[in-house]
Length: 403
Ligand code: ACO
Image (cartoon, rainbow, N blue to C red; front, side, top):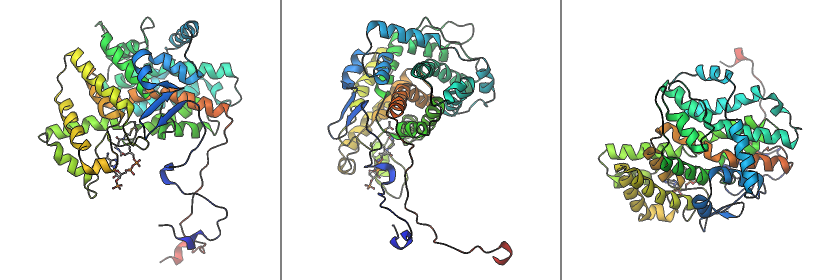
């Protein structure tokens, strides 16, 4: 509760909106989202069409530059990205400094931030467009290398170098899974499914991590520092970390005997901190259109790979029970994108604590596009106000008189 008496001496009218539930921080022409109708469009293109017909790098180009690339634009873009997939050898020394078992999200954000040291020109806020574009290409190119290396560090294996003859996702999968002296053939079903997941995660307007990227960037910090901050914001279980939390929850339900009703009741109990992970969304109050696409993709991928995952049955049972429960209906709590994405990642052989890293890989073009738009709009530094509720003026008492 706000104590009006404590507001004495504060001037001006300040709106208070914790969590920015109804506060617009910017205008944007990148992503359209209608939470009531369950509509999501990137630059005007329906997410359903992009997920079915496009590729991740094409969507990345669309988000960052505002239009679908022509053939020659696309060739140039992908060629530039492949040229920059290698990272400076000294970055391996930074990687070696992390204990194995380090969560790959922490490693990823650190490696991305280290690019400020290897490319210090990114610290200059007055850089021209070509220089900014080079940073953008470097980010897109090096992200899969860093992501795969963060995993290799975790499991204590030597890193693999990029294979530029492969497409974006196949190259990542090979860097992640290939072992020394053993060949690794990328399964095209796995690469395609991963590409589609990355498209679905590519942007989502002013969510927690994207707002973080924009607000850090608004101080004219380097693009690498801004994206690194976004990765850290994504890490939390209420945001991108939910995909890991969903699988852990489904496994816990299975280990407990599979009683979904019991966990549904726990989620409804206000005394119990447990929440149904993968349910609810700040903006979608109808359904998450990405969850619809992913649910179908999960069925397809599991069938194609011949995987029979009992956790998927628990997920479907839980979804059915929640959709028919008055608590969830009243609060418009529907499965979000992360409810099913973890199941696909698992079927693709991705370890659980890499799920959020893949979310970061998918969200990268969105963060870049939003950072670029913020810069081109010449937006002022982000600096919210507050309403002070602490002590009013007090006299200082020296320590020996405090008892
Ligand atoms: N399980 C049980 N109850 C829930 C859940 C849930 N997953 N989500 C919301 N509620 C309840 C709240 O307790 C609250 O109930 P009340 O009105 O009786 O107090 C009501 O629904 C509204 O919830 P808020 O927390 O106010 O909604 P908010 O918009 O702030 O939070 C959020 C949205 C963080 C996504 C929330 O629904 C949640 O914690 N979900 C689980 C985590 C998750 O899946 N996150 C991924 C989000 S999508 C993404 O980042 C890609």
